Picture 1 (cartoon, rainbow, N blue to C red):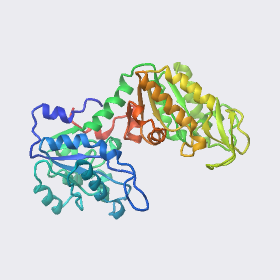
Picture 2: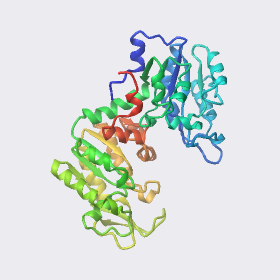
Picture 3: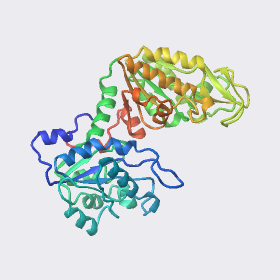
Picture 4: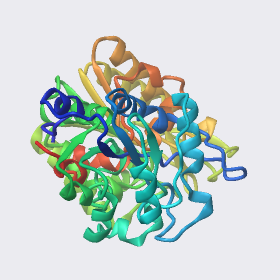
Length: 404
């Protein structure tokens, strides 16, 4: 995975970017305010700047392609790329025209009139149903004006869509941008050649969504820490009372199998010794800390407890590399955020001690930001699903399509 040709390497190899049309797949699927549509977090736009600026500095005619939201193959005015193009223009200090489509004669006419150093934003590629079907004819139209393709959208690299995989078959050179390169370097090293001991912290509500990654990590890690709603399926599999906590009964045997595999491989699979239980699923619910095997009838676990947080911290501080995906509880509610914030603080300590901390996208990113510790992590991934699949050891279609 880490063998994809880099943008810088392409230029270093003698390929000129000057006056060339370069199609760049970015991930500008940014969060917006539902009331007025303004961008609430421009992290993904800022993350693409190194690649865009490199292309501008080398005189390329940069064509940006992205999806935004889930328009389901139809034009949706609330999901147009214009606001993102406007924000990008502010960050760059120059105008970025937002086109009203991503293919067709009008688009081609605009692209043919571009000057060296210009940047344009194509319309939302998912307005066309052919995008998610990876339709070859649609991919060919997207790539029609370009001789070089740059994939800088790690967050969609696990999707074999027209703009992430299909277009690569219609250009002379296909390389990864700076953001993609950074993702592959950190996540690739964590999977293939980590500094040990290697730990993974896996949270989230359901074990069903994380089974394959847990199974894979048991083959790679020295320590695997589990938190979030999924722990109650493991507790029930051990015969412990779980009250009204979230349990996936269909996965009890799988939970048993994972615990057996960890024991067989000599991997420490850690479950919390105590939890914060609540009388109801509400931010202001009556709550108390109880041992993991003593959740009262009708109550439900919404966070790991202080003893578990301390024990997990002790184990993780002894590790050189820690990968984290998924919160320890309902961290959006302050009363049930302490376990998640505690893990974030521990990872910050791992970093400051010279270790490597990798936040694997999704809710873990929001949790680290809520704790005010984003700057204290070695790497924060921009792709939840893509980072999970990479940790599983899967080949990402958007990366496999690039030059090696």
